[in-house]
Image 1 (cartoon, rainbow, N blue to C red):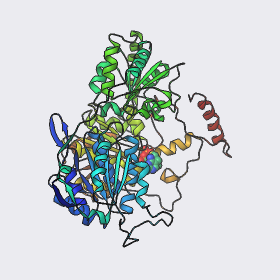
Image 2 (image 1 turned 90 degrees about the horizontal axis):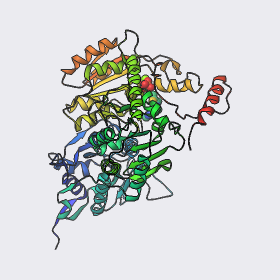
Image 3 (image 1 turned 45 degrees about the vertical axis):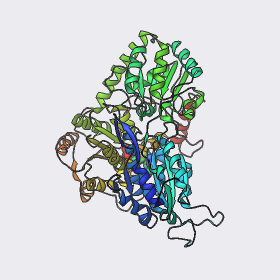
Image 4 (image 1 turned 180 degrees about the vertical axis):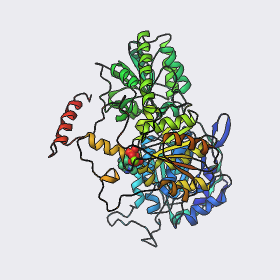
Length: 613
Ligand SMILES: Cc1ncc(C[n+]2csc(CCOP(=O)(O)OP(=O)(O)O)c2C)c(N)n1
Ligand SMILES: [Mg+2]
């Protein structure tokens, strides 16, 4: 007879979560770093009560917004290179659907997170329960079905014993480098409280090791042949290079074979900024060095990259005739994008296999010389835009000031607005993971909540969050959580009084200045938002500074403050860095009554000719 233990579904779920482990640097640690929870009738009595029972082994944190807490959970996993992760649980209805944006973010960025929204009664007795969305054409639909397209695995738990198979599947998905992403288990309220005789073996400790798939022999042959024939090879390092912890391997591979490396926004910090072969950012927000080489490259080895439009310059960046792309990726979907030559494998294992077969082969010495001189030119251009100023600063000048004050050791967090492009070009990243950019979904409102998740993952690191006024207004409530749980963030708010980057995009596509900067909106009163006072009201130490030199002083002062600090600086909404960069496909109207739109359309049609389909 199998030994069993009688528990509610919620108690079994909570106990199961505490028994899942992983190994980091030879130490066995819980794979779940904790649970973010906001309770309502859909989870307080069931899963909430069960979380209380395990609170010493699996800490529960109360946040202020379900979207924010789920962002924090995703950021925790990203900062842990997907080796550890978190859980986010909500009530039904609005609490649940508040997490959908975070699910999409995790889905796009391939980051594991376990979402446990409450759901309607499986027995349907009280229908419609408060907050139930009713579908009169389909009795099986609830609001939580919106998680389906943004979950890698979705399940609805309508019987207590279902979690035995559902949690096994959830763990497989969460820990698989190719599949991983958000898992949503939608927990019917009545079922959370139902008891079942669970086999004791279900709660046995389980240690999950990340899988490192090795390349297929034929794919490896093809990739080796392409590289050996290359005269101008480049490597694009994406997020997968970091998640695979392939950075040391990447470094020696690049050095030995003479291949310049360029980084996507997600892969930045794969090599330290001052490594001779690190050409910096690539693509739309690329350095002049990377983009010069990418335009000439005959073989592009993309390591762990989704090859999104910002990386490929909307597929107009690689200009050489017959250029080949090798897609080294654990996920076949990414490896074969745009008819790339797939090399389906873990980044580290794939680079090792390539290295073993390439032997002493190296690219022509002239190619590396070209790369090094292109980098020297770029560094001069980057210095010019980040040097101090006494005028109303640009984003680049603020970036310069933050870097001078805190250096490459800090972990920088950002996601949206004009900053991701500027930081991608200009931030000088140090150790792997010291640059945390969410630029797959580029979600306004991610930065502060994400910073909290990063700090939970890396409590000893100096976590700096940079964001615009628009993103701050969209979501700032987790400042209060960071103060409450003693996880210090240094937050720098760049106030250009509006959606600066979209205003610039609007101008570049011939549009009128309309509905982006606050002054260009329909208003009776022009808002004068005091961000420093707002942040102080949530318990943060805050300062409004008048210049980049004052910002430097305030950042020094903020170092010794124990709680979250918020520094606010006014910036110029019209300036972004012209140096480097590449065309980005943003569709311009084919007909318009505005001459400036017609002119932009003409340029657009010319640019489209450079796009390789
Ligand atoms: C949730 C969300 N809504 C809309 C957008 C589109 N969008 C991208 S940047 C931006 C403006 C950001 O303003 P701010 O944070 O002040 O940064 P700035 O552009 O001024 O640098 C908008 C509306 C987005 N990325 N995310
Ligand atoms: Mg702004």
